[in-house]
View 1 (cartoon, rainbow, N blue to C red):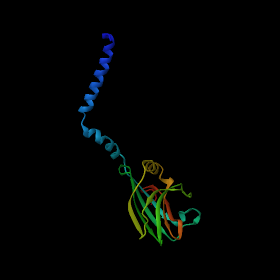
View 2: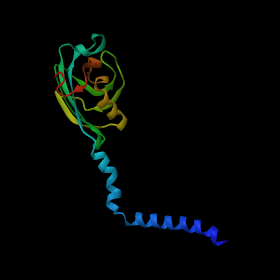
View 3: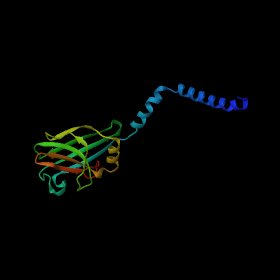
Amino acid sequence: MSHRASRPVLAVAATLVAGAALLAAAPRSAARTAPLTLRAAAVDTVLTAALSGKAEPGNTGDTNASGSATVTVEPSKDSVCYTITETGLADVTGAHIHHAAEGKDGPPVVMLDAPTSGSSEGCAAATASIMKEIVANPADFYVNVHDKAHPAGAIRGQLMAKGMGM
């Protein structure tokens, strides 16, 4: 190999060695915390819903029952935390956040503990894409509480930003 051909090879090798040295000198804690810092920057979003039987499509809900839900989307914890209260229902069997606009039925996307004794609270795992959709378009999601007499839904309310109508 001639001296002219070896110079570019030596330049590339020197660049690679310098880059490796910089990586080795970087603090390990910075590399570990960078993804966590990005996640921690995510903002929690508080949403509410007024629950009623009249909100169930086709007047199939319990018109004598009512309730409320507060939902906090917490991206840093990969969860949705909630408090649900209800009055007037017997034999509550389930609660969910569903994806559908007002007046429409949609699939459940987050499973919640049923308010079997009038209230429930907790946190449920949720995917990043669902949390992003809920925050961007809360009115496209609703909280639904089911009981034995109304298996498709006894009371329901569309999510909205806290303070917007409750």
